[in-house]
Image 1 (cartoon, rainbow, N blue to C red):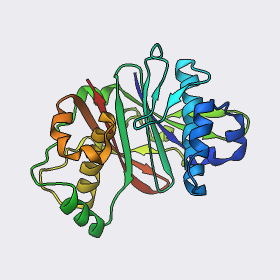
Image 2 (image 1 turned 90 degrees about the vertical axis):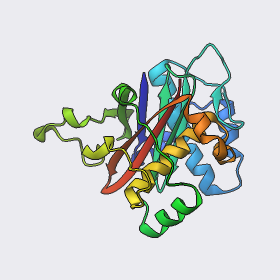
Image 3 (image 1 turned 180 degrees about the vertical axis):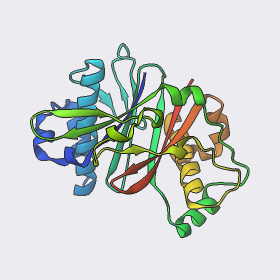
Image 4 (image 1 turned 90 degrees about the horizontal axis):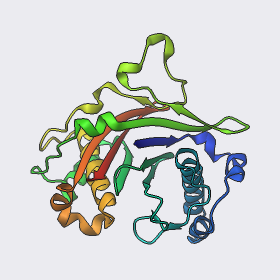
Length: 245
């Protein structure tokens, strides 16, 4: 199973955060940074993670090691996870099938940033083969808090959408072009954003971050990758997932 869960802005509600029973390791990680902005982002992200681990895998108080790539200390709990957030959008990847996962989310870049990103991180020789079987395994959800208890809405895949059953306005919508493979050397903002999220998801899957960027082709040999485009509150985001085989 591979689940990608958007954490809706409604989960920033303090009542939602108060409902989550955080483990000591999570509380320590939330209180660690000095920046209040970072504390708040971690509070929302990891509160949602704790809730989702309990919801999907019945792990009530996870002991998480936050050194480098976060993981569950209890090896008998064979669940891998990763978190990414940008510009108010938070996404969490959870899997009990792959030993390691990496996820990245970015809103579509403007042309100037795309040009600089291409020059600094991406080369015309980079080609990412996307895995159709991996795409078929992924389930999409949105975690929302509407008072009372948190609620998971399933985000329909394109073929599941019917005109009379469109998702609620605040639920992310999977765009039709999500399976389009970025062309080699293409410099437009959508292609650059997709290629950048694919690269970062690979590095996060391995755990070394951008310090391992020189090894990305080696890391890629051990991973399956896929990318999707979503519309969230009228803004387009690229989400890329890498899973270590």
